[in-house]
Image (cartoon, rainbow, N blue to C red):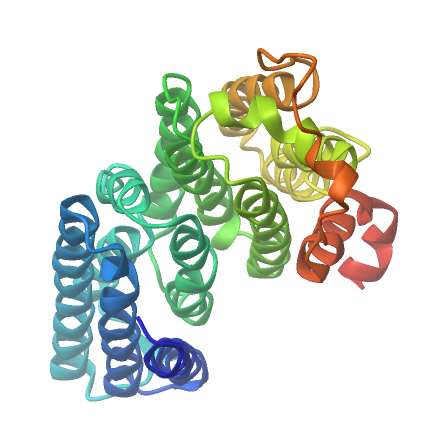
Length: 344
């Protein structure tokens, strides 16, 4: 794809997301979602490989179905209440349908099966866009309609997603599929807190975006598509191995790293609301996710690939580290002391 066309597609992608995030009328939100979907289809299929074509087709079908359900739920609501305002969704069947549609749009379990397949068929950069930027529009709709969406459905989606994201990721060897299940688990945490504290959900989303971008940047820089590929990271840059290890541990939610902050606040809020069993299940599901982050940590930082004395150390040639990788990695590791500032 030529740089001009690629730039047009990315700007259309950004425009679609911004239209959805800034709209209060359901039709405008729907137009933004459609523009968003249509812009990323060519980006997914740039590899000209049957698997990428299949990924683009799967992505289009699921997103089109979810957008149609969102439009249908808003039409039912408008028919019954006479308003198209996103914040005024007061008709219960519409809210239920909207919750299901947004779950499909985001890739929440049990409507998650498209996400790992689409990421596996995309390049690492496209996978980064799908797991970060593409979550903004649906999450903004969830934030706007948080007071009206059925809390039990959100809590159920949250717990199923966090458990599925942890459980299904245990068996994966491809880094993109691991990141897909990581995304499902994190989105589950966000969904479970939405009806209780939307502000914590937004904070969790921001930290998730930072950590995922940091890890994907290091995977793109080291060209690691499987767990086996990560064993050669040290030849590229010894600093990168340490950074990647810390970002992975942060994604797992270990203190004193950034990723501990959202998990800590969400568990605290759930216990305050007398939802201790739910909090316990969420904490146990985080341990499942932590296992595959630790496995990646082990292969990246603690193992050596088979090598000879003539092995080339690429770091001797001083490869330039992308500034984005440095910035996002720093944020993904050191944000915990700023907790009071973030919450104020």
